[in-house]
Length: 185
Image (cartoon, rainbow, N blue to C red; front, top):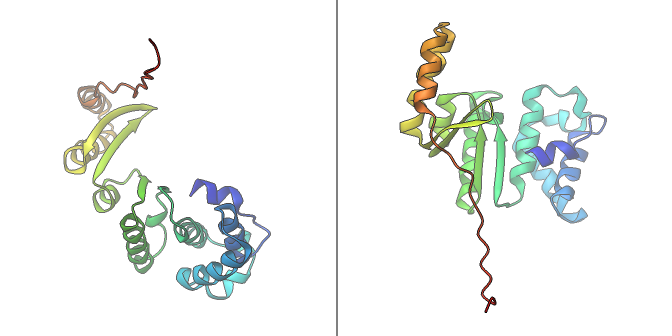
């Protein structure tokens, strides 16, 4: 959704922004016009779809960005807690749309501080703290440790939280690329 955000303009309507976002993703003008109408219906923005984006609430903006980002098939979608914005009806619609996106062979990366969001939407977790990978694994394995760490921090039990973090950090080496020259005699 980062690329969608870059294309959106506050002074333009949601409808025009939807078209711009779709054009930025490679659609033709005609395709973007048709698909923008679908986005307007899916987001349920009503008359607001024709008002300037700068008048939108954060939830309305999140709906529009999410709809634009998932309107076209792509290999990877990065979502920054957008699905937790808005009412429960929208959360269900967004989840269904994300499931459809995944069914079309896409990968969704959810950036979230909420263990419950991660439990609902992910099958793998990469926990990053201060730019360092702490853990990488199954949700059922990592989420409980993350929740415990958060509770310790919330209760100002800093030393215990720090000890838990240190005991959890994995040795995570960056992937390496090895180029083999088959033509070397």
